[in-house]
Length: 308
Length: 322
Image (tube, rainbow over all chains, first blue to last red; front, side, top):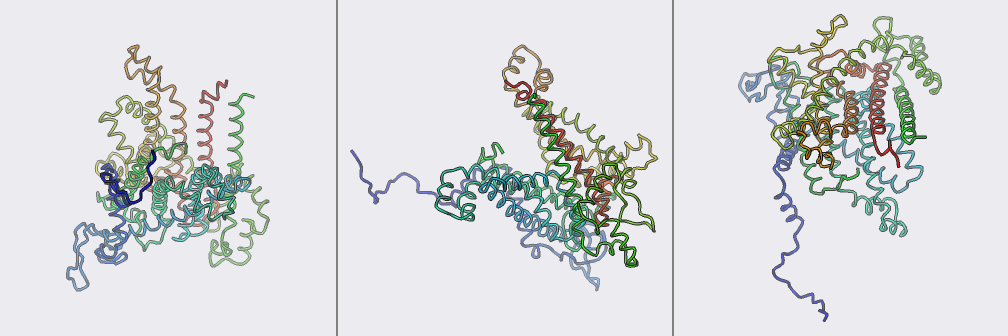
């Protein structure tokens, strides 16, 4: 006996199809404490970065008074009236540490994010392209990337910065270029598994262009591991940029960046003042938070990183 | 030819090729210098003749291939030319600047390795022995924290507690050539401890993971059933088979010291090659930066090569092919 399809039949007792929002809610409800901790920390950082002028009590470069003021010291205007407090003290030029920490979130995370995006754009695209083209293109590009990868990133960056001089633009481009070699490796390996699929062959036979193959056939299938890798690469880029600005070869001293803030206030350590540790701790906390969230993401999509 | 030997030779040849390619990259950065570079380096007072002489010395007027062969030939003999930074009329040779600092950095690196490697192995074995206990969890959390922290954070935390609060060690590690071994050790202790914290975590986790993955094998079960105490089982039966991944990760982490050393030397004002490189970047002193980069890159490539070689020669599947 066959049952004819009756589109007007409503089956009761079964839940309706869940929407994307509902799915997200359920996933979040099952997230472990560590993942929640990570997400809350990241949200706080992003909030600080986006609304820095609203959150910060003073401007990024305002010279407000005494250098190296204590925590909680009053801020006075020229007439001597109190206009606020150095909640976390002031730096070597009398700028408010708390405000610079908040603006530092904007500058440091912004630069690291831009760098990682460029790195994924270049490395990811090149990796997929090479997987489609194969042959000598693959061999040449892969050997070149292997050679670039055999020099430690920090050393390579220092060397290039000697020649280009230090500027935000040079820093972002250099780190993005060096980091894209790692992205290239992953995206090439992932794309190689996809290009052999029948549907890619079908798309090729249809006569689809390279851009279509990359965007519509390959990218959607390698996206989850690439997203996880984005988190990890962001951490790495973030730490490298912090290290370079700590070494004083990163950025101009006017803009607040956590790495250089550590270096600027380092002498305070000798007086048992923990101010220089604050920006360093801010860097460490964000790295831990991103790592925890990536771990959870990989755990949920477990098996994704097998064999890579 | 024995397959191990063949793989090994291939790997060594690839390593040599990589070194060659890297030396070309390092050499060629001088090509990208801006055009008015000579004038900038020599200062405003330089006459056109001195500029010409300087340009001839760094060889912008000769073809790049000739210059590369000259440079690498001299570098192989330990001659990296003269530094761009001048004190009065004389310019010091790069070697005379680098040699004493390289010695200091090697001292720091070996001291770190001497502390970190046994510590990581010991902690790894203990964590595997008492896995899922409080000890294991605390060590795991601590190592995860040190992995995620920037090197300078760890350095300043150690400085705050060990040098400022309790005066066990000096705040700055201003090593002098006249210092005896004891004084040198005392001054280098803080940077070495920081670097230890940086690299111990990865090595310790690998040791723990390598041992635990073996504990499920039948021969370990057998040893346990014979009534051998758990510590003996791990040290006598599990550890020998876990050496390959552990030694690989040790070599890999020693290669990572190349990066860590640059930052830690800066924090503690340790007169090593890392600090020299950072200072020379600011001063646009290209010959010194090139020499430092070549030293760092070679160390990095050779240690990674060593890790590869060890993992090849300790691989039983390659050693005893069917």
